[in-house]
Length: 219
Image 1 (tube, one colour):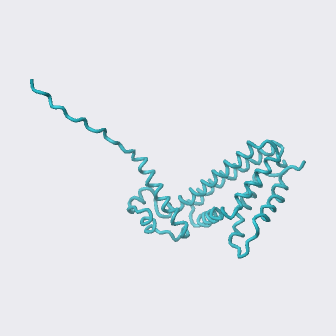
Image 2 (cartoon, rainbow, N blue to C red):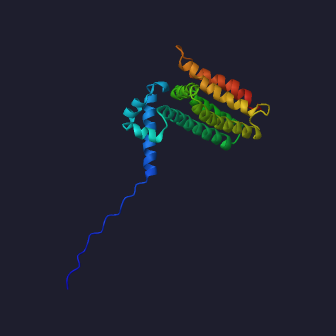
Image 3 (tube, rainbow, N blue to C red):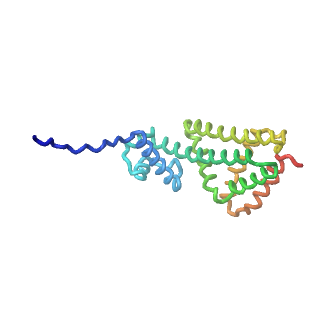
């Protein structure tokens, strides 16, 4: 009886998820743009610079983004959104987990110390660039407006929660407080570009006196 020839089984076919690969390429383009933004103003970044930094063909860039400007806008907004999420998470945790007003106030002082530090200078410059760049792009301005509203609304809700707990004065308008908190955080950039810098402790003490001292209910 003739032996039957055994054929080796074919290895399983690897099916690559085109969506995952596409996401990876998109993220690589954004990462390349982030690197360029550390050394160049948004308006200075060209298509050629992006293609060289990401090491991709022109068609690849235009497959994922309408233009080089759209990639720059997306990169700027992504960095801001990441910062927004981190701030919202930290402030909500503080409002939800503080046991009393004293603990809440101490937490706010720590947030101030971190957010106003020299280490956060890059974040302040990045947000300033984003705001300035949005002046020439209606699309970016709309996207930024949505993210800005999300941040302001979240801080507003945190102020309301703190008022209900009896920590923040009822006379304080939550939205005005939310805008003020963001304004002095971004406003620190005035000192970032100054020839003579003020001591960080002096600035933080002023915030403590004016904002925390002015908004929190005194026993």
